[in-house]
Image (cartoon, rainbow, N blue to C red; front, side):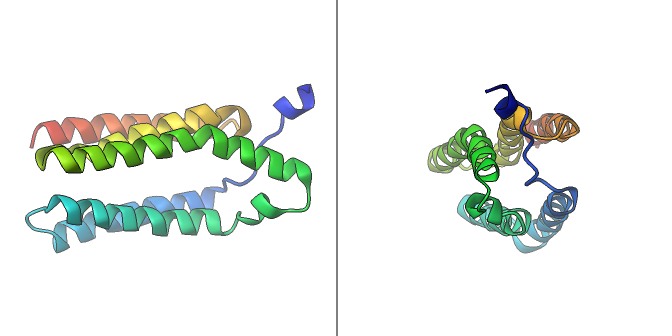
Length: 153
């Protein structure tokens, strides 16, 4: 029982996660170039596509952990996904509600997505390497900046 609590998920590598940041920066540059003025559904569709591409780049190299022959690898992968998936579900629900209820609220989505991502990382922290707590704190700080910027537009 205690051994299971010390399992560390090795599915998060720095390179693929950094690549998601590159995709986000490229997406931000493309968004301002492609969408003037911002149409809420186009905005959401574009960022969902960026998220799918980023996730594929991040998870593609570690997908074998879900199906590997080593039971410990599958078990810790399921635990991390179980800890993180409520934040993904909350993000999808929040996105659909904000798109449905107002064009002005859509600008809050990047900040809200960042806070949900940080909460997912904090929830999965017992299974992640110790340094990942800094990534979670970074996203929480980024969320604060994004929401502050959205409120001043």
